[in-house]
Length: 170
Image (tube, rainbow, N blue to C red):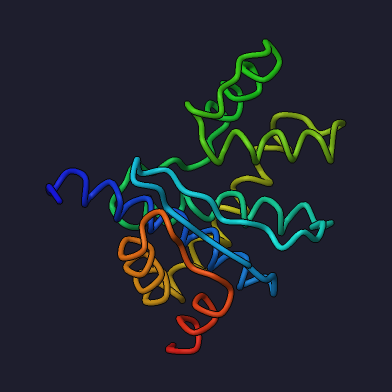
């Protein structure tokens, strides 16, 4: 495997691990997580509905925050970022590929709190970003172990038992 592909898979593993750790942080189960050979990934929800906007935002942003803590781009939620995201959403631009998890977080926030101003959305994302940074910092060893296991099982992924075993190693 060449270094570029290996780096891409490692970053995908860290990203998905960030979602898993944030789900665990909030007491949620993750039945499966996988990264694909093209460097994309998926963290499957447990089928339950997350009522708390705070928890939904924390889980949604967990991947991007983990990437940034691993040396990837820092996407701190600024007013300018939120303005651009909301502009894309309002103009009907499918910006998920461009904005990633932050796009989903803004769609979630505006869907649950349609009366919120852009400043409200920015504040909620900033608070979530800070919570996520703290939670991921505390469990950074687990993030690394999950990422390693995901890279080792590209296309197959980890099931709930394998995920829980990694948390138990802590």
